[in-house]
Length: 167
Image (cartoon, rainbow, N blue to C red):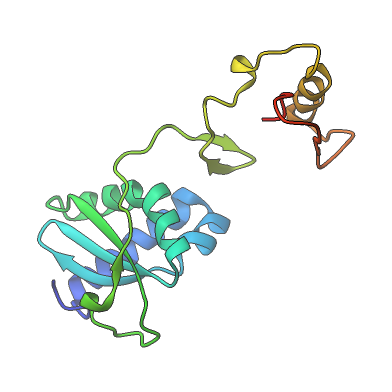
């Protein structure tokens, strides 16, 4: 892997971070992307680290493709982004001491909610919801809570026995 201090790669990393700040929005960037540390480039692969396994998995699942696209725009040979967990508290730990996290290829489409891009499970949509006598109330309440504007109740809690349509 290339040195962590490569000034050309570091300049590209800063440009990628700037583009992602604009693309993802300030809140998403500060939450998910700002904690990442650039480790270097190795041929067609970019290596970044995250301070926790949760953050590494989230970034790999939700932002790896965006990171790869931004890098590829500036360095056409880049094909992959690897997100690892920074297990060493020292900021200059060797990449061999890091545990690899899952790197996600292109993700399923995400739906935008209140300016955030959140993955939603397509199986759990109103289009697939089967309404029956035991879950009519849950169905109506969930539809009311999902409509634009402020609902009369927030949050919505559903409590009932197994198999009565809460999911």
